[in-house]
Structures are given as structure tokens and as C-alpha cells.
Length: 333
Ligand code: ADP
Ligand code: MG
Image 1 (cartoon, rainbow, N blue to C red):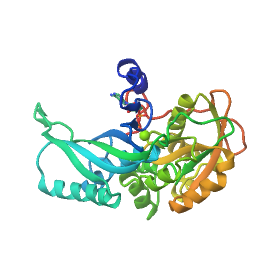
Image 2: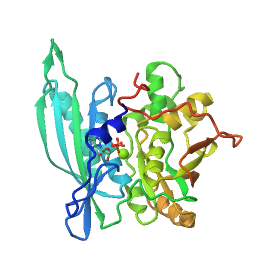
Image 3: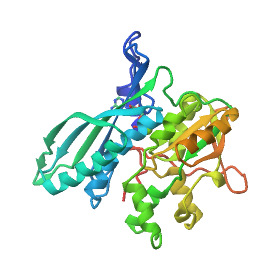
């Protein structure tokens, strides 16, 4: 059973009509409607030591990333962050660690005007002399004008497919950590920073309201996450590998490594979105106002398949899968 089959089978139930949940399971955020001019976008994401961050990560970076991955889901909904809740299971009360963790957390929270509104703190259990893994769960709440939340469901045939920033560096950092590739010189720190300190694309998400037809944040690899847009929108896509934005560090790698990192690596936290072709100039302007690079990488098609074209514009065999917590593919070192 995959992660998504598990959710569909045991947890996804029809919403009661007339309730406050305007959109439930299936998007980056739930959308709550209490009848006012704005709606609330709410998301929750959990990070576990050894699975979501490397054991040697700086606690400042862990604090940043725990909030950043949640703000990235708000960005994918086009929501403005308002507040968050923090639940912690800690092996011990290490003051040095907590000072650095909270510093990293609040640096990002303050920069985004997102206040910590509550949470829960427990000690992780010790089983057979081994302490349970440090676990951080954040629930973030954002605000979006009524009916303007971006979803995974609105992509239409002939829409452009766009990507923010560059893909694949976080996965490259994991491979470098495992010793299977060697990014040289200062680029090694750059790609590691992309893994440890992702930038949630909040300003871009907000600027895409009314322009993008569908949006998702790329947390589990482009092929899988774009696949969620295709599934929810009931469309297909043609993606041009040559157009997929990737860093100089990734371009320096063998193309098989670069493809695996940029198409199937996780942890990029860039936005993948679709928009009608007539919005091209408006999207370029929105991206400039958000000071974020955006690149057109393909088009939505009729049908349901995702076709990736290689450098010679030939359909590629796709040996890549998205990250799935219960599947067989596991890129963690
Ligand atoms: P993301 O990567 O943006 O966090 P996912 O694609 O992993 O989202 O999750 C798909 C959807 O399933 C989301 O709407 C998420 O809220 C929902 N979901 C995940 N786990 C559960 C669960 N245990 N119970 C209910 N909904 C869940
Ligand atoms: Mg997401």
C-alpha cells in the first residue's frame, strides 16, 4: 500500500455539506470558510530526526525547516501566513539545542509575520535504553481572499507548466552526504543549504492568486508532485527535461544523477504551477514582484499521461518514482 492509498482508504471521507471545511484532504492546505471575506488555509507537517533531517543538521536549520515546509504548503495555496502551532517530542531538554532551534524557527516566523499561537511539548519515550526520535509537528494557518485559494485541481489542456527557482539541489546534497557524488568546492555548501534551509515561496504564491490554474509545492519530487496536479485536474502533461531549471552544481553532474535529483528528488519546496498561455506576461510580472525566478517547463495535455521529453525531444522511459513513505523507493541515506 502506498502512502496515498493508505490515506484514501482509511482517512479520506466525504465532507458534510454546509460545514466549515470548504476543501479537505487532497490539496496542500485545507480551506476553512466561516462566512467572512477571507478563508483560512491550514496545513500540518511533521519532521522526524533521521527521516526528514540529517542527524548532524544545525538546530537553527531544523527550526527554520520545520516552519519552512509548512509555509511552503501555505504558499502552494496562495495564502498569507498568519500563525502556527508547534508540537514537540524531545529526547531531553537540551538548552543549547533549544536556544538554537527556537532562534532558527523565529527568524523565519518573524520575517513572514507568522506568530506562534500554541503547541504541545512532551518527552520522547525511552525504549530498551534508546530514546525515541526527536519529532517536530507544526500546524500553520494562513489567510486567503474568499474563493481565491490555489488548488491542485484546476489545470486545463494547453495550460503552461511553470516551476519556481531550481530543482534537485536538496537531493544532490543528500547524495553528497551519502558519499555517492562529489559536488566540488563552494557549491557543496550551496546545495547543502538548499537541503537544510529551504525558502518557502510565499510572495510568489500570493502573487499567483487569480493567475495560476493549479499549484503544488514540490516536496516529494517533480514527477510525483506534478502527478498530483494531473490526477486532481484529470489531465496529462508534456514536460521538457531540457527546460527544467537546475543549478550549476547539478548541471556539472552526470545527466542520470541530474535527472534523478531534479525529477524525483524531494525537499525542493519550489512551486510547480499551471496557467493559461494568455497569462504568460502577468506571471512574469508576478514573479518579478516576488523577486523569484520562474521557468516554463512544459504543457498540460488531454489524456492522463505524464510524458517527459529528453534533450532530443524524444519521450523518456521514466524509471523515477516520487518519494513515498510506504513505497520501496527511499532516498534517505
Ligand atoms: P503535502 O506533501 O503537501 O503535505 P501530501 O500530498 O503529502 O501533502 O498529502 C496529500 C493530502 O493528504 C493532503 O491534503 C493531506 O492533508 C492529506 N493527509 C495526509 N495524511 C493524512 C492523514 N493521516 N489524515 C488525513 N489527511 C491526511
Ligand atoms: Mg505540499
